[in-house]
Image (cartoon, rainbow, N blue to C red; front, side, top):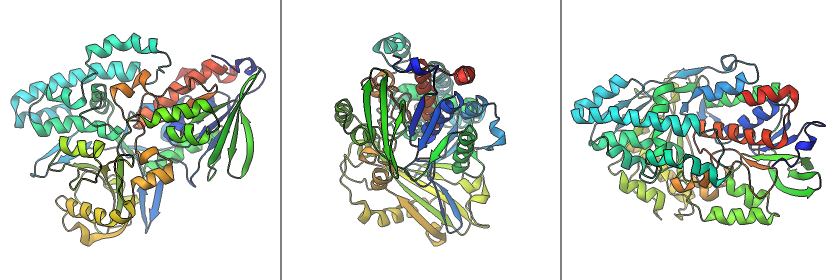
Length: 516
């Protein structure tokens, strides 16, 4: 497919990128560096998409994501432009990666020190120590196949899936993350410690493909980081790079409708946005919500409407209730803390398939000022805590009514790791599934797009290039390889690789655009 490649030698292809999340920014940088003319549209008043930044009462709150892994895939964006990431942003190592605590008082420091992990597991069960070593070797093999070989490789044809099927079968990708972990270790807390990661990309550990165990090896290999100044500083660095390359960023400019009109010369996408007349583009890269892209942006396209109906039948990831709060004193907690509730499998079933808000919860606590005190006033501390909850398609919850009491229950629960917390909270705000739907146009208020099940991964996931609408490409959590910072940045790499094949590259940008 090269519907406009004949024009590559006569003019620069013009690309509209919808949404300035990490996937959109990465795609915009790659295209701009390769010589394309790009316009990056962002509906909100700040760039970053889900990586928005709130400033309140002297506190800086990153909306997310806050777990920065595989830093090389970020550095690669700077390198292909002849820059060094360290000149734009500083990534600080986080140690331990996570502190895991349970309601019975047990705790576990999860980090990249294999000997330390082994020591903690051996103290619980010597046989589990041996099993853990075999688990690490398994995750190494999955990492080599699932990340190093396939993460930035688009799956556009069923034959692409057949080509890797034997390897995936050998690695038993049909098993769930939890089912795989339990085959190596017996201690239930260790099983939870080695299986919770799929929640960070929107997947139920009891349903998500074992291919996602690669996250364990990925973190162990490269570490976990946090940007000095917060995730917003990383967004600002990428925006600066993009604009230095000549890219145009339009904030507070939601795209309202796109029409794809075909002619003998190819397909032209007419993009109508707030405050601007419809403009012609050779291609569109949508980093917006998948369903919103097809159902709203391409509302006049029959093929897009058929895709939207298909997406409505897909399984979507859970939503989140996120509580941001600041305290007038610091707390002795890890940068990342996972606070497990009394139930694990049963709670996850309620979150992913239940029709009501569960009474109990498991929580992820983010304490950025532990690593970077500048994010809170002197003597204070900034936090956010998120609770996975059912998405709006499963549970009809009046979040406007429920949110205040739910936030209070969460703070009360955290007092087992943060004594007298409620007495020291001086500011707070929250983000509910309703906000995911209204602020981010997320279908069902889903926090991570289409769920990462085996039957919704690789070729079975929405493709990086739309098969029915020429010139429409997808980047972000909803396409291959999936959610998470490495996932969305690699989605942009896979997507732009297809664009370069379809449209050709200006000679000046060809080497840089394909070297990464």
